[in-house]
Amino acid sequence: MKSVYDFLSLLRDNNCREWFADHKEQYRSVQATHHAFAQRLLDLIATFDSEASHLSVKDCTYRIYRDIRFSADKRPFKTHMGIFINPPYGKRINTGGYYIHIEPGHSMICAGTIGLEPKIIKAVRQAIFDNIDEYRDIVESAEFRQCFDHLGDNFLKTTPKGFPKDWPHIDYIRPRDFIAMRRIDDRFLCDDNAIEALLPYLVQAKRFNDFINYTIEDFIDGDDHSPLPHIY
Image 1 (spheres, rainbow, N blue to C red):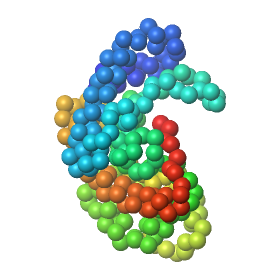
Image 2 (cartoon, helix red, strand yellow; image 1 turned 45 degrees about the vertical axis):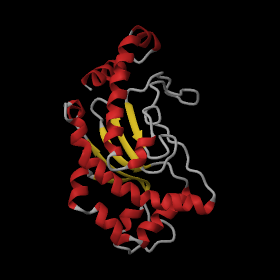
Image 3 (cartoon, rainbow, N blue to C red; image 1 turned 180 degrees about the vertical axis):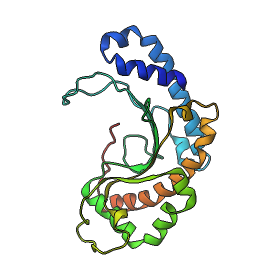
Image 4 (cartoon, rainbow, N blue to C red; image 1 turned 135 degrees about the vertical axis):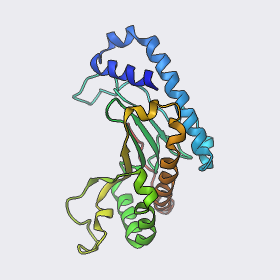
């Protein structure tokens, strides 16, 4: 994976079409390394989350090209690579999954989901509120906290509407994005044993994803909604 990081560092400093065209063969080699890593990750997750076996690398990886049509930032290429393994749907559905972010100085491993529509956010909050003991058993366990040190993102500044302000676990339902995350050193994924080292993170991620997804899928089935696509 070191070649992936080296290429992304160069791309960050030379983010233009001319440079990329001159280094297209290097990119193809790096992409092959990235895809091989994604396949090994898929194979590992399939050992404890059987629905991952139905996904391909294409279902879980992204184009390097940025969509700049409606963006003020006209840089043509992403300076990161992502792997979003989301059994059984793949990357385009935003139920909770396993996400590896590969970017020099900003790598991370995440569980969960972002970008839910407001009605589904409310349903997840209600599920946490109604099943707080089960949720705490997951996110407050020693094993989970050893793997993830950041829970939730895009927080409300106030109490979500419809919930008591004095509820002692209010911070668990203030996020708009229900994720668990840990930043990792670039050397982590460059190690020969990186896939094996990710196993405890992924196992804990599944516990978190299962809780979130039960609520999302139940809501979708009962309310005739479809999840929104992810864009990384």
